[in-house]
Image 1 (cartoon, helix red, strand yellow):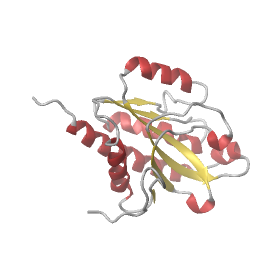
Image 2 (spheres, helix red, strand yellow):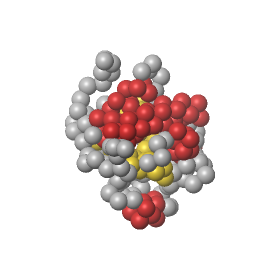
Image 3 (cartoon, rainbow, N blue to C red):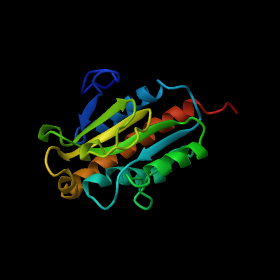
Length: 197
């Protein structure tokens, strides 16, 4: 049993961990698994990766989506990749498509975020919807029942400039952790709900 790195429930303080922590991948997968179990069982799961490849800091979501395309369970639908990013312009259109494609899936939303200097590099898993665009004062619909965010840089001043000048190294490493954790958690949960042969 792994020692918890951060305390708190999904209903109060969402757990978080530094991407460089040796057990970051497995801890995030554990938290995601716990959050997924809070929702009614369904064979369908969607992962909505929000962001754009035109901004280094905001490319976290599309990077995760592209990596998941190679490793996710066949029953998991991926929305948002480097080739087909989901961002402010097409988010509503993507949500409409998801409603047409799937029947009441579990939706896990992934996005980059900005925070305090001391929080840069932290990955956070939360129960409840994600509020995309909040860090840059955009009014977008809330998405997902579960969310996972990576704090890629510092908030508070010239957010667009900060996102564009975020180091690719930290974003890539966080994307590796998040995509691996999502693959582990969703494969485990889908296996539990697989039909008996």
